[in-house]
Image (spheres, rainbow, N blue to C red):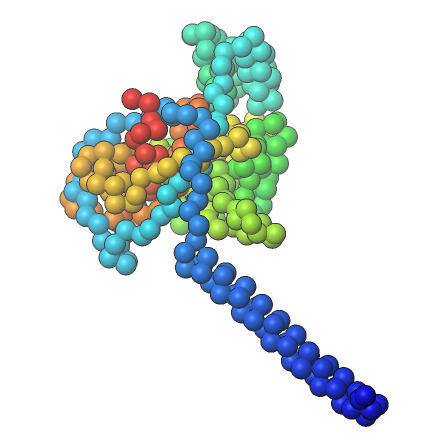
Length: 360
């Protein structure tokens, strides 16, 4: 029969070795978890197939591009980077003709200061004119809601002497507040603005060097980047951010030119409004071309080259990345594109979705 001393020694040994065993098992447990995670990092499980919720898609309706320069690929790394094998396509509901179109158009015109009955050259195009000093005019497509407001500021030359602008931020804030007040500023175009300083040059607007030198200020409102969120991240980590590009990459969905006048009917000199809706809650993933395939398509005459870049000589492509196309017209889908940027403002696009998923 064991003595009390022997039992005590045996208990201490059991506790000691039990503690060591617990530590060893715990360490091995964490090592095992780390090893599994590292293996998954090196050999991630394949993603599920692209969801293709909308079935086959209508292709990106690029405008015809002519007189392209010769293009060469000269990227910093020497090769086209790797891109994901799929991208989201977003539903962009196309506006259709309805009974409320005329009333909505008249409400917008009224908010812009055009109170008289419009001319109707066609069923879908309305024109308002004000018999004021600046010959104010508003041309609108009542279905899309797109419009162009213009005023002949040259009829009042003193407008070119009122450019006492305090800061870019103040100009943007004042314009945003006005657009919000009349219901023409959506959340997805707030925060992505481009300022251009303009001055009077014998009745024409040309670029000015600085805000202090400007007689007028042009503001372009672009759509915010499309952020891709890591679905497994609790902090909603952004893993990729895709910019929107338009047919004219320098022109926003909304472009305004403002004067320094305090009178609202003289404040907005021009406004081009071409905003289109996107339903960000309704999307599907689609397989996309590789960067190499997109380059092959562009270099053999496919895709679209913007009109603002060079038309001749040899241009080197410096950047290739993914983005989305913001059509000038009402669009059914917001479609991913490959964007190619080069010297002298060269910009080109290639539709990214695989041709198998595009309606012929």
